[in-house]
Length: 152
Image 1: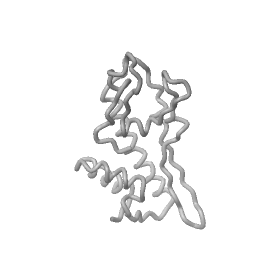
Image 2: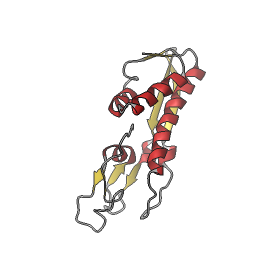
Image 3: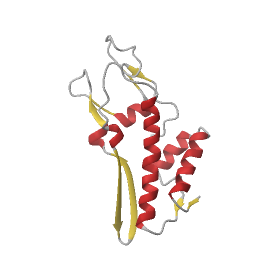
């Protein structure tokens, strides 16, 4: 598959989500858009494509955030600012890197001193408190099955 611009990439990502093919999308984000070639000729176009991917990921994070409001804790907002874009030039080749800044996604546990969790993985895969504590049955706090349709 060839993409001519950032809009083509965004449309492709949205198509996969609409078709319920989030696993394919995850693979394409981690790989090179499922083996696709992106025919971009300028640094500006590459930046636009990387920003399109960032915007796409951010829209899905916002959809998750809009799906419920926490009652027991407050969101820091760091996760919304964790998607980073870097454009580099090496040996005449332009490269884009879109990634989650782990300093903004890895958080200390509320209750288990020293334990940490990566927000990206927790939202994608879910979690379950292992101890028999008062909040173990509170969704989004003691457990979470992972967000349906997550593309992270």
